[in-house]
Length: 180
View 1 (cartoon, helix red, strand yellow):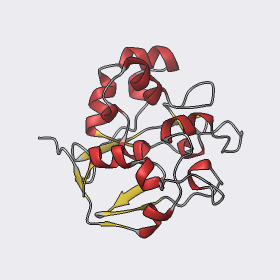
View 2 (cartoon, helix red, strand yellow; view 1 turned 120 degrees about the vertical axis):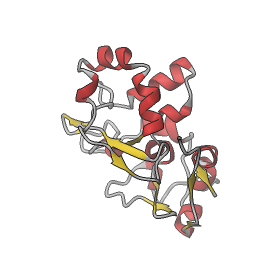
View 3 (tube, one colour; view 1 turned 180 degrees about the vertical axis):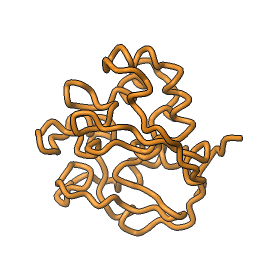
């Protein structure tokens, strides 16, 4: 049976203090000039662990992804699942890196094909891996905190002038994924 939410016991103050995205998380990610090629996607550099629940949604659209990316579905993912109660569905699988980035990163070098499909077709947001939905927030052992980011992306820019914190700009996603 799939777990509907991931329990969180503590939210570190950095999550509530960090300024949020100026134009919302997904739009900001699609326009951010972070990363070595200044096309964005620094967060996609090594792939992501995908919740079992997200994986099940992705598999329903495998033909779309295979056609769009030019590879077979089994090439998108690692071979082994990890049991982990801190993922929706209580297990996760990693995405493989292609050309140094997550296998779902757009061929154009900007954005994610999972996110793109969800918004184009109004599909469930749980198709997007939890780690991507709340980035740069992350979690481990019931604690929520910020990722350690080397590049000065819009998501952690110290000069960010937005009024809302990253917690507030990501609140809808956080409340869907986590039991607080």
